[in-house]
Image 1 (cartoon, rainbow, N blue to C red):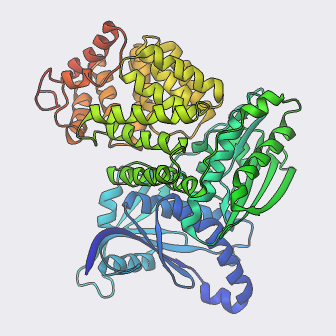
Image 2 (cartoon, one colour; image 1 turned 90 degrees about the vertical axis):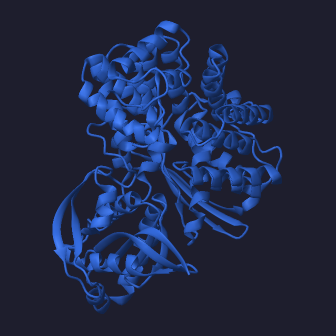
Image 3 (cartoon, rainbow, N blue to C red; image 1 turned 180 degrees about the vertical axis):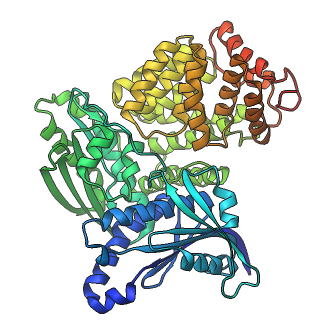
Amino acid sequence: MERRLAAILAADMVGYTRMMRADEASTLRRLTTLREEVLRPLIATFRGRIVKLMGDGFLVEFASAVDAIDCAVGWQAAVTQHEAEREEVDRITFRIGVNLGDVVVEGEDIYGDGVNVAARLEGLAEPGGICLSGDAYRQVRGKVKAGFEDLGERAVKNLAEPLKVYRVTAAERLPGKVPAMTTPLPLPDKPSIAVLPLVNMSGHPEQEYFADGITEDIITALSRFRALFVMARTSSFVFKGRSVTAQDVGRELGVRYVVEGSVRRAGERLRITVQLIDATTGGHLWAERYDRDLSDIFAVQDEVTGTIVATLAERLSIQDQEHAKRKRPENLQAYDYVLQAKSLIADSQEINRRSRVLYEKAIELDPACAPAYSGLANTHIFDWTSGWSESSEHSITEAFDYTKKALALDGSDSTSHCRMAVIQLFRNKHEEAKLHLRRALSINPNDADAFVYQGLLFTYLGRPEEAIDALTEARRLNPYHRAFYLWFVGLAYYMNRQYERAIEPLKDAIERSPNFVAPHRHLAACYGQLGRIEEARAEFAAIRKLDPDLTIASVTSKTAYKYPADLEHYLDGLRKAGLPEGKGPAAPR
């Protein structure tokens, strides 16, 4: 008998029996549409697994209680938006319960108290509400932007002891795990566009990665046109699973045009539907449906990209159009493995290893698959930066060798140039890093990550004001960026001696990704320079759990400052905060 710890989400539709009696066909159709077009993609976004569907109910398993709660919050928000135009009495609503507990695994199904408690919590929730157990609450408090109310202990059926229950009272997070923009962003001075995640219409949630991969390829191809301003993938994907209009997207991301559509993959056949919308008016500028063999996937992507560009920009030279074409994998199964690997977010060592295996499989099938080598290099970079490797030297060498191979196969890939720039930077080869970043931005002038790493390079070159400018450009291209952008922003402000201004982005980075040392370290240095030693102590307490052996000596080996004076300025903040010089506990005395 297999057992494991899991976060369980149980959801049940309110008033299902009443609505079925009133109009069975319409209710089933609406529930199916909601499930397939909104809820399945949302669950996949938070790495959930649908264990079973029970007519009007769902049972979903997550590896993380934080993911389960974020999904529950996004679920209720998405359903509310989806049903907003209907009369209140006719709206579909759900109750949701979330528990963290032990489950018994039997094939694809799960049983046990962990599941039973989630079902009981769902019954305690109000329509449109979420209840969670005390065990789940202890795991998510302080990690999600949601308010909670303690409902005390409740006696529930088939449980010997009362159950500690909390309910979500307010939730600021949307399905992309980021807050909504507070003010509209101004439109750029050239045609601006966001490509929303293509909806997976295959009927199989495991095909989600394929739809996402095609979307990302279209974004990358469009990004290479200098005549366009193209929103980064991270910010476009924040709308995945959300029921929004093109106008909503345009206002929130500050773009004039929006692309949306769907992908249906059935065996070796592929159907892609795409439409281009003017976000200022909601008017449709172009729409097309492609029914092709799977082997035509790259031709379809090129055709979609070319049509969009031709529609938005009146004059594009032949050279620009050729420039936008990328070297494609020869083997479609290898390409599929690459898409699967890229769909995994390497926020744990185990997930990083899983993606590595997929990249290796792609290379076995197609030894000339440049994206696979580039992705494989990235797994070693994660090992190196996250402390998952037994040998930092081995990880950086592997990352260098695989990136070099990727660039030899396809020197026109901006992502590989970015990765090589980071590797060369931390090998203290600043000029080589600069050349690769310059090449990345010449290939892809909309590459937000390239601007981010340019900001980091400028910081280490002792040019923090230029670093801040580059980071500002990156955040405009990618407003819903990942937390590491904020580490670099905070460090740039620190090196510019704007310690107070560095605090907010660093605290935001820690709130979003608390398990990385760098933002804690930068924040401790800020507090040291400001004489706020008690707050520095709190950061060192967090660091001690993540890296017990952190010292001035070990920090020195993890930086890439070109000039000794800049390194000393950074270390000075840590010394003032109380970090010891040599071996010893990473906390002030």
